[in-house]
Image 1: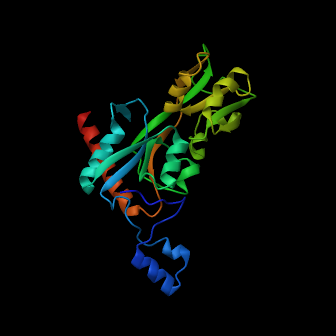
Image 2: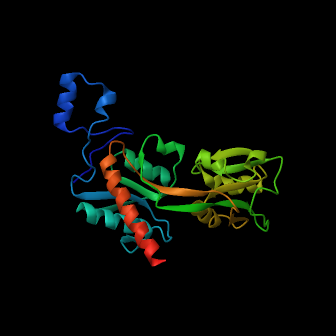
Length: 255
């Protein structure tokens, strides 16, 4: 069934409830608190996903496998629905698909960034990742202690409150990058001393430029990874969190 298009922050109100709001003169704020149509009411969970080519999510033939798809398998089994995937090229396209109602849920090692956490519902964390330091090749310093009197670049995917926990970050200027692809060039030209980004972003940058290197930031914060869905889907998110709990319990038993 074709998904109903939803704008950012929009909710689909059941027809009976909508009529009741209009008749009673309820405020928009109260209306948005009411129950909304479940995203899986049509029996299909449509997941927007990034092919990370890593243990979290990777495409094998026409199917997605990995940690994230395993969580969705558990969720679909619990809800009695089927799973369909729609691949996105990057995070911006992924979240646009969610905002347009083309997918029910966004997956791709997403973080609790300020850009999305205030406008979407987030799941509980299903994993954590360290941050990576991007420098010129052959500079073997894995923290910011050796830098002074300059600026470091930060990926927009690093939540602001987590950036404050990066050791020695308070002694340097900070510049946020909406496009981390610019970080290598700015490092080489001396615009910034180094860049800091997520693991997945670091791996992507290494494939573009042979003059830069990446290493995990020593004693840096570990960033939580979450899934996002549209506002008004609290019941669905509760089911999603239950599936994540089951998955994490299974992982703990295997260790």
